[in-house]
Image 1 (cartoon, rainbow, N blue to C red):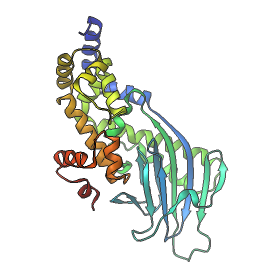
Image 2 (image 1 turned 180 degrees about the vertical axis):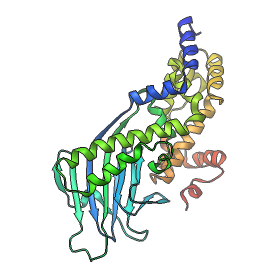
Image 3 (image 1 turned 135 degrees about the horizontal axis):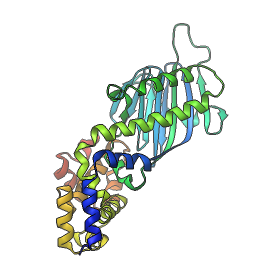
Image 4 (image 1 turned 120 degrees about the vertical axis):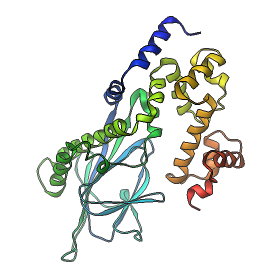
Length: 325
């Protein structure tokens, strides 16, 4: 049973305004650069990034355009565009769709200072062929106690969709264009700091604009006991979760837990587990290109066939159809 203190905490959490939990999220967010690159290349070119899933990847196009390819998804990034890939993953920046990509780690670079290097392959380029100038950063992305929110973020977060709402971001992007285009003293440090601020602003914009439909999830996460269960499920999605196991995490009876869970999130506990698994499966199929066997094992299904049946029931597609094969 819940004690009086827990009930008071739950009530207070329910009364917390949206702006307050956004502030709490942003205060707990840690976005720290691991490595940065200033890249200048002449078409045709293709660069591949294999960013660890625990890290975010930031790209800014000082002079474009460039094609971003992530799985089967492609989008054009024009001059002044910035994107954040909160879960990293393998992706490419290309001058055109047919160009083969090379691993960025295998391309010669010149170290400029700690964690900052320069890639320049614009030697002897023909007159009239403008180079493409990019700035990329690999970042450690930590949301603290709200880390499960990462699974709800889109694979690519685009600054262009936020400029009409947040015009104050434009001067930061213009400053990045100047610093990435000119050989000025201290440019490396200024670019890396601007990248951190722009990336954090992208996250804030997504939370403020696109999280309206997950307030119940946030409030549940703020509840000390429900939050513990949600964090455990997100941490171990492949565990053999039962209502009894989840109630034990919360420290109450199955009936009390199930009622509290459904009341906060509008879905049964096991329904939530299935939704999470299918969301992760879709990401791993389309973005990370994991095999069906790997996904089935990671998500706790006894066989590829069992996983495929569950995926088809939840999404209306087979795993192969979702992959585009």
